[in-house]
Image (cartoon, rainbow, N blue to C red; front, side, top):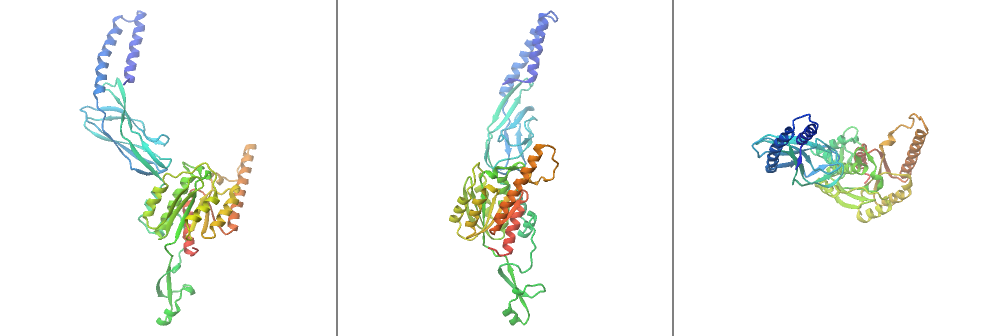
Length: 434
């Protein structure tokens, strides 16, 4: 228990009165009378605070929240007293998350229940603990304050951002892919698995005509095809030091996981199996599965996965994938291609291409979007523009080396990554390249 500002001000006033008495400016008995009155008021007020029970408090927050998404947290406070109660509230959230609305002064009316809302933004994935809730309660006369901790512990799991997936759950796979940003023209009858026979229509390809059925029906009959199902997509995500770079509030690795979940969702809606191998720093493997329930399993498997400050060993990643994944798959390797790694990356991709169809998605830093023709005012500006031009040139050369050996390359920013992955996956399906 500590004095509140009101009591501190009263004590300072008594001290000033004592000093003035020493100089004969005020009657000698006045400071003693004021001090006695203050004691008669403050002591009962202190005992009243000690007897005041802490108000019951509950926290309304889901056990699972997405990273990088601001969300409200509701603290529900209930009064058990016959008088109003004033106190300051501070929820003991994980330390470095951006928070708006804390701490806050609350006046809880007698016998009432109120909701206090604040907002926070999780900035890291993993399991985090809310230690409790701190209440700094004021005495009835507000002369004293006492800090109490409500034992309101709660463990929250922060997952990759699954909010966009929830928006796609109620719409079809084709429309979902367009919402993501993938734009592909679908031609009727295009696909790799036979679906049905129908009458010939103008514009049908010659290869679609079923000549035996046409002979029996004495008119042209075409075959309709649908995209082949039950294929496999393997997401090979880099957990090395390159993915620690940040664009906005999230690291590249968080953007990578969000995009991987998006393409996984679209692939599962198409009837394909999806797996994931994290390699480079921390290693984790999720064997390919089918069915939309796979999304939940992927979230549970990757929510605490993080990039580490280690150099990525692409050859070791290719070896691990070759041992674990025997069936031919579309391998989407998400990394940040640098010229100093290109020899190892080329060897790793060449090894993977013996069995799989490989696409390398190379994340591009937002800083590379700056124009090279920006004004140069001094030597520092000149060095910066020259270094940027050299970096872009080396990056482009690395991408061209990958393309030269038949590898698909996506050079994209974090914001462009989800749409680019989905569009490439659908293009592979349309062309029956698997």
